[in-house]
Amino acid sequence: MGVIEDTIDRKPVVIFYAPGQLSALDKRLIADSKEVGSAAMFSAVVNGRQLTFDDYNGVISDNQTRSQWDVFGRAINGELMGTQLRPVLRSNVHFWFAWAAFKPETKVYERST
Image 1 (cartoon, rainbow, N blue to C red):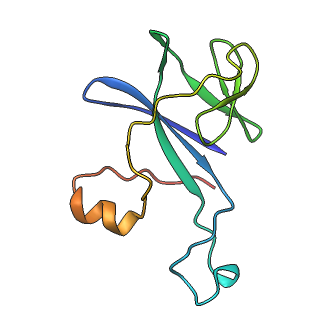
Image 2: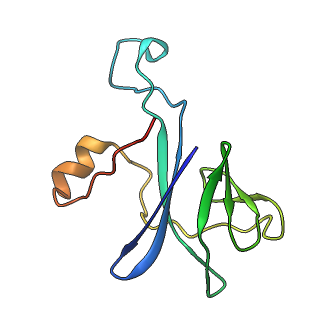
């Protein structure tokens, strides 16, 4: 798992990353494709309160309540269990090549290993 915190238009956002997703565009059979992971971006504000997040040994937790979150922005454990972070992007299509074509000014973060 991974966490990136940033701002867009001075509004706090958080990006969650999870490894394991295989590329559907790499090889003829998806099972033979390279691992590209998956990521989603959310507002970091819940009920008017800004949260900050960290990856603790592969588990995403917020620093304020220590609730645990999945890559889909759902609190799966803790005080905020059942809470859903508001997605920043309203699309079901998140292919990098399409995004980059329409948003060439996008900042790219380096994934640490």
